[in-house]
Image 1 (cartoon, rainbow, N blue to C red):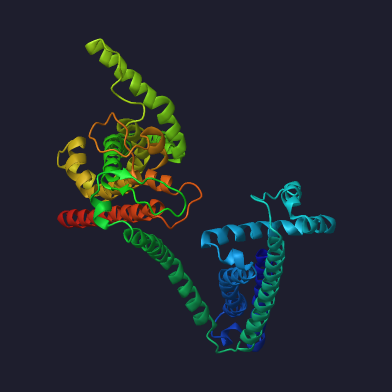
Image 2 (image 1 turned 180 degrees about the horizontal axis):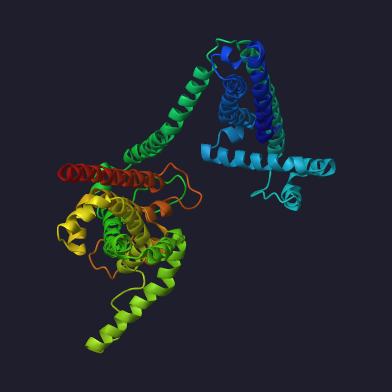
Length: 493
């Protein structure tokens, strides 16, 4: 039984339980709602929750745990020579078994017998069924695939039986507990309170999980490469070797961090003035008609995929800057050699800054608009001009929010990848010339995790060290933003 069908059955049982709970509440009260502690709807909701939540928790736990048990049992059926192989090779073998298991139900009995007699025909037969098998199957894989399908089917049937039985039992016992003085509303509201608490904790738990997963692999990396060589190294040369290779390259963070901050700085130089001035115009000077047209058009930039910005930089902005530099150089020296490369820091910074303009303008516009109207009227009433009011009253009042918006934009710039790949290149270099290519931390994370790799060598584990470094940088930005907000808020209040 599929999980979707099982959830549908549980919802149907819960709906019936809700109706029965309301009917029983009305029956025990003799048709007088005043005799009940709670409204009949609460009794119905209590019975429905008792019929749905416990089996739902069981389904979630079962689906999370059963694959590990089934997969481990299937691996135990592998021949001894396969068990003696490395964990990576065993994982590849199990991947083949899982692929074959997905294709077996599509075969006819004749096709299955033909494959059992000659396993070399499996790829051709599966190709006709739309199932791609990467390598030639071995005889034990067919048996393991059949075992995997059988255990998976048995697990799902057992799950369905347990979940449906638990749902019916929950509905039965909760119906028996319905009585005039039973506090159904308190029970239901307590469940809702726990649900709200769980929902509010998801972000925190997700952050903890991300940090824990990155930190674990990063610590593994630092057992292979000393931390001081990573954090203070000035050369990035990971020297990719074969799978499982332990040959160490040079994993200096400084060139990547310099490129990240340099490109982000150039992007902020473009985005902040344009976005902030646009926000001031739309909030203070634009007519309602102009605002209703300009604000949505400006925010369209935020909806463009970053890969499109990358193409724009690669095809338009980069070549334009390169040709422009050649023309300027020719007019000045007679030598038409370009001094701006198509892939450079300035190309990536300009295009990324264009992408960030709507973030700055939209957030700043909302913050400036939220400043109380009385402050504007009071300043103008005292004889200040509109520009003086903006500089000395509105912007100081909105400064904490604007700083938060700018730091949020900076975090967005630090995490950008596609624009940098296409507009700034992948060369890890340390230089201050904005007309030369550089790269960022995020680009190298993608490079280190591209392809079929094993997470056992420093060449791949370094991606987690880079990731935890980016997380720490973002956390520092957020802490600094909180400090600025509190400082200026106290001064203003």
